[in-house]
Length: 232
Image (cartoon, rainbow, N blue to C red; front, side, top):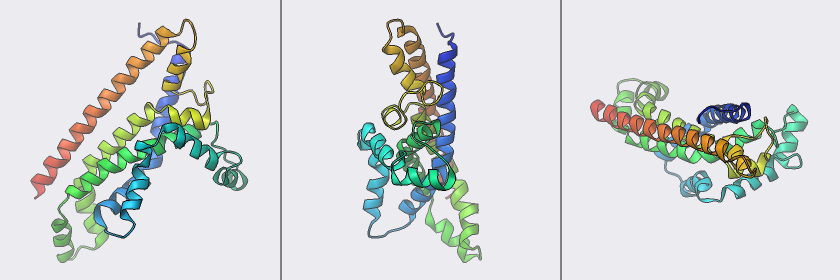
């Protein structure tokens, strides 16, 4: 039952590729946003927080449409990337990675933000009082103590990327071998008379990955809390 066909393996491999690159793509901005939201107070903080978490409440199709308008061949960002760098993301696997990164970013930022907020600022202040600069305090205290939360956020983002459908199919369509990720492949198989078997196999695989990601994220969050309590 779990012997996958070449087309199914292709969809799984593409999903893994998209999930990996989308997670790597969103890690730097995700941590930056999480740190800013966790450590600073400024007038537009609520607005920034709302923008970051907006993909969680917007219909994924709307997010995909916005990406298409911005990064499509006629969109301002898409035209800039093509004219300056010769890069096209619409209807390419790179576009699928971009869509998945946008959809997974809120989950990543939330996990990282909670982990950073749990680090006692008194430890950072004490470190700077003893002569450590801001960067040294950050790399020796804040970053190590919040690392489990960072990893948990990356895991959740990867799982979201692995199962992203609405924004991806709207932005990059359904092109076998190029943009047909695992959830899109499930949708395609369900449209054919004999596609129930492959769809069920891929659905089971998707559930396994999702459950593993949730368990891993919960374990990392508990570890982060334990480390922070031990340090204080």
